[in-house]
Each structure stands twice: as C-alpha cells, then as structure tokens.
Image (cartoon, rainbow, N blue to C red):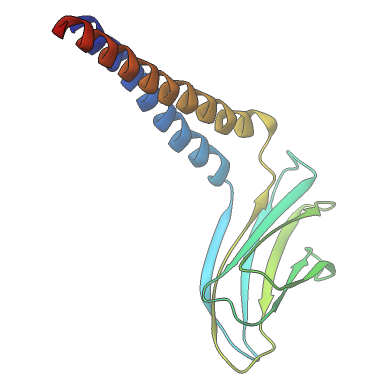
Length: 167
C-alpha cells in the first residue's frame, strides 16, 4: 500500500504542475491585452484604447463577451488615424477577431449598441500572443491529462493490490 501512496503523490504533483502551468500560461497570454467593461446603450459606445509603440506582431486580437445576450451589437477597430479597419456585427455571446497592425499608435475597440435596452459588455484588445506563449497553454493541458490519467491508473493499481492483500 505504501508504493501506491508514493505514486499518488507523484501523479498529484503532475496534476499540480499542470494547474500551475495553466495559470502561468493564461497570465502570459493576457498580460498584453487591455480590458474594458461597461453598460452600452443607444448613443453611447464603449471604447477600449491600446497603444502599439513597437511592432512585435503585425496582428492584433480582440474579443467581446455580451452578458445576458439578447440583441446584436457592432464592434469596430479604429486605427491611429481614426479610420475604421474592421467592423463586425456580433450576434453571439462571445466573439473573437483579428486585425492588421499597419501603423504605430493608438488603436481602439469601439463597441456600439443600436437598441434602446442597455447591454453589459466585456471587451479586450491587444497584440496577438506569440507561439511561445500559446504553447505553454497546450503544454499545461497535456501535463494535466497525463496527471489525471496517472491518477486513474494508480487508483486501479491500488484497488488491485488491496484485493490481493485481503486474499
């Protein structure tokens, strides 16, 4: 029984490592994104600005979540010269999109509501995370799956050994 206890500690450590990597990966991915939230109603927009001082990537990302989704809204990306470079009608609760970063300066995510009813909206905008940051998310998933599979395997091993000791 002592051997299975040691195995439980090992696979528990693997699961713990997977959870830590998951939190760390999410922190890395979201550290460069600018977040905003608010109530958006007719005539009022939620504007989330971000300044791109250097071009590490030529692609930006944005995401919108509508709380208690009932009606569609419009999301626009505006470049530093106030030109609209991307426009989407959002007709789902969660939306993610990409846009090209061609000039340095302040880009804005503008969220508009064309309905009278006020809608609570969350939005984020920022540079697209590089492959290294994204890979930590995948690695953490694999480590978690291995750890959880190990937990199952150790449980089966412990049950079989327990039956043998009672025989």
